[in-house]
Length: 331
Length: 240
Picture 1 (cartoon, each protein chain N blue to C red):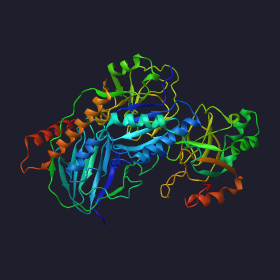
Picture 2 (picture 1 turned 135 degrees about the horizontal axis):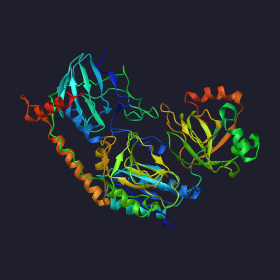
Picture 3 (picture 1 turned 90 degrees about the vertical axis):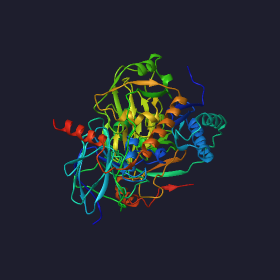
Picture 4 (picture 1 turned 30 degrees about the vertical axis):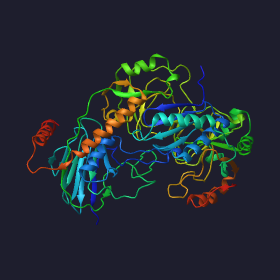
């Protein structure tokens, strides 16, 4: 039997995701891929994988997996999301080894929505159209994971366990660039978007972060001839309620897009839990590009902070263990 | 207020859209298709992929490795100078079984238009359509050129799931569906041709700019046709 993980149980939106499926958007195929790219990249790096290996993406609920045949290295990255191996907590932002037969417990995701479990060597399944990312709506790349599903892993070399010091997240506003169709809206609509708080709705998913808040009024028709959209597009249907598209969005849509969330803030937006507040702010294209460059620099810094796990527990790892214990006792 | 077309607009830091207008029009679409060809040929640095739609082209970018200002200038120039080349696409003849269980809205649509179901089939299958875009679902093919006598507003309540291969009418457009999906369009027939088949080369058949004609077949022929196309090995007739 090949080494791998078997799903014991998991939340209904658990999927396998990698960087995404590119080159087929002209034929109506979503890219899919990790909703929170930076977390997934860090998880891969912590088990020594290439940045583009597929991970298991958990959404809110988490899940349990059993290790089959061989020892595997695993790492979980997600906002305040516990990882336990045989009941023992693994400090956040570091890898750990799980032996044959061990039960790996993930979640729930308490500080956000998405968490990523990377496995040393990566997941050894057949890519479809160049990617392992599952687009549950069409079945391309697979469906959501369920009890009994097996995830074979590629034969990894036994490497050192690693840990990282990630740059901390911030609560700054989510930045957007106006357009492409802001001229379809009343003049005050962009001001409302930039100045009013919006709430993330509970029907948000991998396709879109759906919001509630003030109505963004169209000048005329709320329908346009279908054109291209992308993750980050803020489309506004006839009811005036904005929706920010995410990784599972179709490549085209028929609503005007008042603005587009910049690439460097999309991971952070997607991690805001249902019921959470989103504040937006407007930036220029130049500022958006500068933010993308800065985000890449930060990611590189986080990745270069990765080092072998020190023998004794660090103050930081002790603290994170205590924190997790403290907040799970009440569950 | 009508914008000056063509116009190049940023979609955040990860894409640029080039709009030629905001209507369904073959001449606009021809410009989109030709610009798409030229952008792909130019292999501009930072461009990940392009998505041609009815009257605009979306150019996806790597935000960190693109020179946005240069790209906007280059794309503006290409869009302004684009010379559409109609008739470059391929021609397809697509078999369809109309009506009955294969197109359950045909009778109602014909009645609403004041014609017989037979006349509706005739009008639908005697037109050469243009593929305007592929989108919504993998391989879902939007066709322009529907006879105005068949144009029918979309259903008030969309269906949650329609069969793959559905041939349908929505407003002034008709389309070839690919895989089962929700839909508010009127189902008038079904084709066994798979516009999307993940294990076939090519995975997708129809591309924007192609021409499509429908060839009606009686319901008794369905099983034979389906067997022929199900494996993905057979192609509809392509005349180019």
